[in-house]
Length: 114
Length: 114
Picture (cartoon, rainbow over the protein chains, first blue to last red):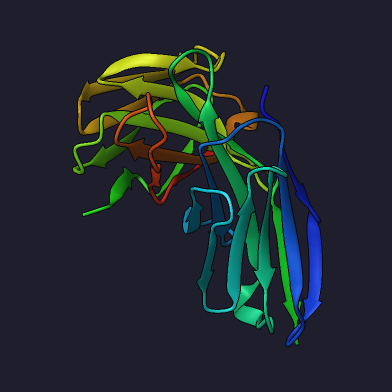
């Protein structure tokens, strides 16, 4: 059974600082996703990572994927308060025959303080 | 159009009520999903429909009854729910579930059972 581990689960940052969220997964994956979720809202897709060495950047967020290490990172540069949210990684993999399922990490609650 | 719509946005129901959640997509996707998300937890898969047939039921109690009337619509019928069923219910769709395709999430229905 696929396991997805995120760390840290809680992250309190100061504005202007950099930090990285890690996502480890236990078996071969076809795709890895990073989502943002604001309180009471749905999931917002941030990045879709398809292949080894993939790197994507949007604003202050950059995601990377190392399929050999089964590791993805979400790097936050010069954090601002608007980045405060919960961030989930999710892995899409074959489960039970020919079907694919998304398995989510537990999420990282990010709080950016002034 | 990459939109998945869900109605209602909020629902309050008593334990003896019967209600339904509705999800709609017009992207031609043939896989549709129901997830349940409790506060501060990742989404949990409940059901998956593939080509309008139920493909996955993650051992969900029978008080939740899914229905897929056509390829664009997905319903979740609720009956005799318990207070612990209060959660955010997310619908998603993807091109298919037999390959790794991105899931598109709706805005969710916030359900409160009193």
